[in-house]
Length: 114
Length: 111
Image (cartoon, rainbow over all chains, first blue to last red; front, side):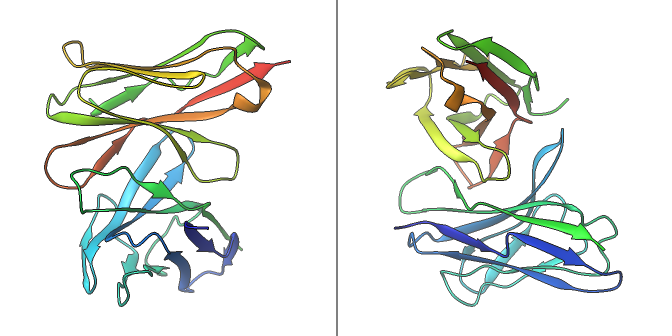
């Protein structure tokens, strides 16, 4: 089945620790995105990438980092500089071969602070 | 003012009712409009995708876009308890590849 796989489903972070969230897609999509979802705030864009080895900051990139070494993979690292990391993190992808194809989402990773 | 406004609800209806969910927006450059359904602890699932103004129907779901009023709607006919979820609207422009989301409306369909 084609889709987006996020892991782990739940993640706990200790103070001062960096953690990495995995996102893999087999839809052959060029663009990939990371969003943060908080209650009542909707989806906020953290980072996005339209091509391997290139990515752009979104609205709330501070305290996060990403890499795009393969087309299928777009991991997100939540660093210790992110002081309020507790949230639901969503990875999405979309094709770029036609104008503005819709995004498809994974099932998210819920990050909590220990 | 947010670019996309959506009433968070919650909205509660009896089974079989017609549900109307709405979003308004301020940016006239938006050309593509989407509705997503999100169950608790899951990612959003694409329901409807429309371009410019008009209606699109898919089974019990109808998406309506009125660009002159900057207003989009999702209608659910013969609502079922399985329709209980949060519904997100989203939109994008002709250029670039960024998407703008509403905050979501929580819907409960009571058996």
